[in-house]
Length: 365
Image (cartoon, helix red, strand yellow):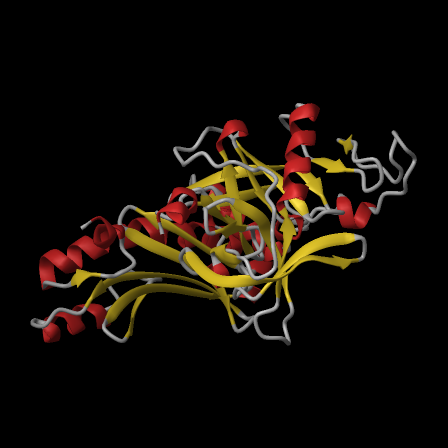
């Protein structure tokens, strides 16, 4: 539908260290508007476009009361300009929920408005039967004309096709306040009573005196020791840790040349790094297997899943308790990236292997 096509490219994925969500890019101020609960506890997040390009954004404004957040990007993105304007909504209107459910590629689900104004704890919601799933939060709800009428925010887990969206009037109000505030940096929380922005952590609003829940509004998600270790090594290797996060606890992913590198925890005991290198060729299998079984690049080993050859590295988490071992593991954890980028080409040139589906070469072919 042409009207939807005009807006879908402005819908982005929001990626943190523990979850993913969706958002809408507002070109005029270089911000992404999303749900607060998507970025709660975060200060920097990754913004991923439908083509896979990623950028780092800073959580600029948090409005927990309305479940709205604004993420500021360092530079403008070449995405369509969309408008956030007040729109009327009627029961049985045809609507479309846009976003990235379950960290999947961009998805559109269709439904109708069940109730245009459902009141819950002093908040208004649009109730719809468009299928919503985790990851849709923060994405736009759009009418047939391709106009944003709300922001998808929650779903009843034990019910079928009962979802809710914040009405666009809340988004319009938030954006108008944002323009008036002229805030450009830092982490700023909107007071639940008077809506003034608080740039510093406080138990009471210095404008109206309302009590502020420091834990709910200002607390930053702490990194555990494994996250600190892996992200420190990523930074040393010039890999942005925020860009490598995949929205799952203890899971990172990045590219080294053509090779995709994944780092994750397996069965709570092992730290793994793997890279899907190539697919098996139709010929020369005996020579290829002899090479793979020779373990030519210790401490890395070759493994196979289906027809895909992986390079893998594994250590027990207990080894990280020894400082000398920890330094060695850090080096080896990052060196697999360079080795994988060399080996995919070697296996293709020497044994006639094919590019793995995850490789950048495959994507660009």
